[in-house]
Length: 304
Image (cartoon, rainbow, N blue to C red):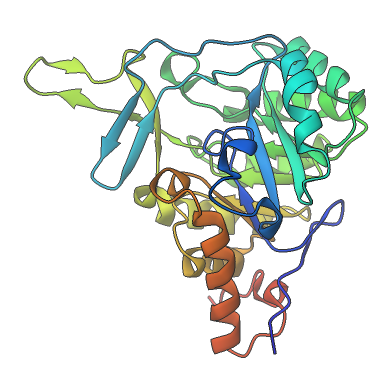
């Protein structure tokens, strides 16, 4: 019997638990030549500020032994161009479309949400309060529970759609931050965003990134991400979406066992443009081998 891969986040039902992570999948349409977009649970599109954004100056991407460090700086077209040129093509593609919402300050987050609330075809918002490569030293709202709670609450009060708060790994107590997001009204949390990192050119003794610091992603961060997902899932009653170094179906299953109701695939998309659909297939194959009828039965089953 083919396993049932449906994932229920309460506010959103997905055909399977695999989402394409923001910043690694463009606006979704770019990957249509490589895969059937309806075969994955959903797409989290590239982060959007209200206006267009060029991002950080190059160089802004460095390959590491087991991942990438990026300082892209959330380059994007802005919500008006997204709504006029991209969203009409995303409507009706047969999978959930989630927008990663950005802001230079609290008011810009609200402006983005208010504008997108007037558009149709979106399933939810992912509130990006955790990007480490926009400001020096990785400053972002998700580093403190008070700023997390306040910003989430303000955005939730203005939004007609479910809100997912994307959390940072660069904190001392992820449970405290996750609870603050829940207290602010988040419908779910997603974690982790990238880890603040530095790459150096030994010959020139200069940083390899123009921004100096960037965000580390890829297989190197998976064990840290698993730990933080497990801690966050134990701390909140809202769904947790796990990401960080997922490159195979078994990686995804490990996140589900740790407590993730769904997962996002990021850096693996750069290596294999069809990584998301391959991971869906591998989850199904794992469940079939292990006689698991419903993949959702894996969620939160870590034995400690």
